[in-house]
Length: 436
Image 1 (spheres, rainbow, N blue to C red):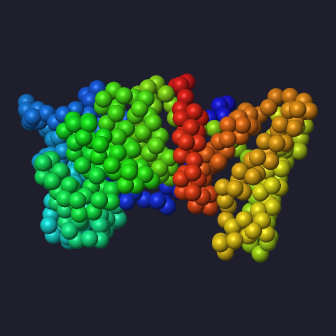
Image 2: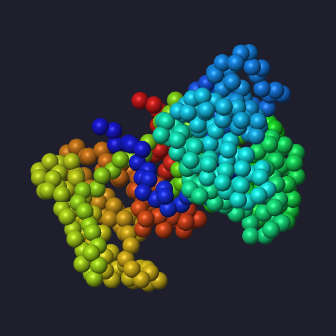
Image 3: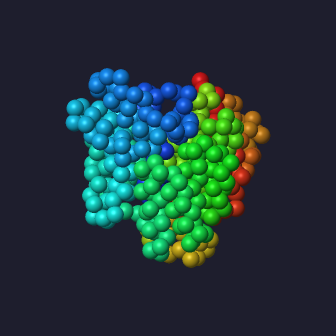
């Protein structure tokens, strides 16, 4: 059995929800991508060609012909024109997952064109309801999942607390939804002039230029967004899409990895790399290392340690898995004064990166000692991976990317700020493999 699996946990995914639904406008539903020309698609599911001058002519009145016409309008970012076609298709076949997915997003995009805030909220809520129906019909695309992330009541996310900046951003979004890219550029540029730190203005300028096929300008603005805030994933991911459109696959991989490094606990951060990999006949998987034993903090200096009986048999000594016994003991020392001394600013115990790495390093030392004494005859594959990670200085990266929990996740920002290179190395070297 392989020691590699898609080891990134989803435990923290709901703790950091997407801050802006406009991020999702480049995530084409999987059900729709199947009926488009595959050569025009990139990982991240963005249509990577210049906008055609007109949608394909409707050759007949069939459902499929009208569906293709709606898809063409969607690909041209002509959301307000695509929406009524999709609504008619939905009336005819209410359970068509692809139509539901597109309709939910076009309704969301079109909501930006309303000046009345209550109408926008109502339409956003309708978009989410349609996304729920799309998911029930079998659409599990990234786009539909993103629409599901908006509040059930359709509440909007604010770009800025400055009225003039917010107005410019709203104007840009409305223009973008209509496919009026000149007006969108003007509005986003005005927002950025008013607030040079407005991340989304720079991001969306890059997106508009990407839609136009102007890669030099799009990459400039994605870089500007990253300069404003290097700890948001979207600009890296959009930049990766742009590089794929230029055929620069290796460079795109690095940007997709940078997106994960920026925000590893967001689902959208993984979209680029997970869709890039199969295009390169690669797969995304991480080391599957399973510590034996369990430790639970019960408060008031009371800690429960559960020992896995398998660590005590003869085979555990031969393959080194008896070393996991020291893991629980090493971690137990953190459930008292050691935690208080190391983290005096924190009032209550939490599972930390330092505690987890301390336990894993104790296991590595035990394994190396067993190997030196030739007590270990055939090292467990998971332990072999753990030792290699330790030798490469990647234990922290492994824990933060592949084994985070709520407590450990709190240590991520500080580690990322000091060790982006290590996190990037871990994902690039340990996470990407040839397809079986």
